[in-house]
Length: 372
Image (cartoon, rainbow, N blue to C red):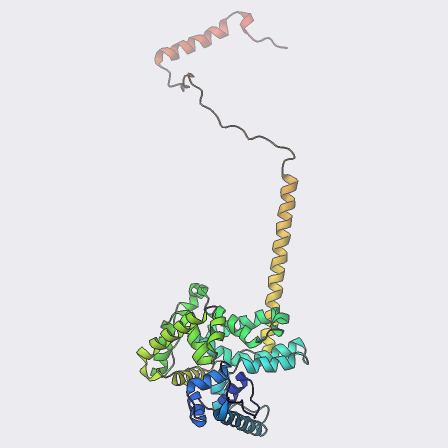
């Protein structure tokens, strides 16, 4: 019976982060260890545990990568600019590391500081992910800011969540894929495509996929989530998520045969997202705009409630105190001759009227009105 390696192994999410920090693909790491790429994926998602000699070799390699990362980080200034490779990999590291960093800092920082730390870590990568999901730069920024507005409004819930970065990512994806955007005037015109022809073809292929397929492909092959996590975030069963992933990969490979390999597709998605100069707003700006928006909605709700109460009171005051039966509908009366309007007088009738007028003036006194 094989035993687990004596060398301590980091958590599954930390294994993936160490590999990406060293600019290694799963295929490259698998060739060093002597296993398949799918085996490495299973170790990084936690579906299987490294065991035996290959597990020991995998553990030693991860520890060496962690030591190299710490040694390299000690020589990098804290406020220095990110390198090209770090910027390229930054958009896929928004799950386990964000949960660990935020979880460690949530107890020691104030809510404002903890929110700013989560935003600074997740927002740049999330904007690039949302751009691949929608193909629109401004919509990607709006969706991410809206997601963080909701996160700040529900901060106690988000702070206690096992994966705050995943919570925000799910909300941002939902906002970006909302069907109501099609009714906005500025979203009826396409935005300028990427300058490279291959990038344009890849973006066009992604946008032609159904939204659920596109989201599944981005989460699994772009962000690097496991299949159960992808299914949970897309609110689908594991089998449905697997079918969507297979059909999405087939659609991409049919138009772009160079991306038939999932590893090549992963890094191509990373490069496509990195070429766009997408910058997120400052955390303080997002937090204050969220608070201002929450105040406006609160005031609008209060005004609507007051108007509803006033209308109710007015209705109660002006309503009748007792029941008044309604007036019955009119009925047609039969046998009444129709009313005839008088027409023009004939010559004979006119002579008679003149005669009567004269006789009235010359008649007896009793016909005349008596003055009082």
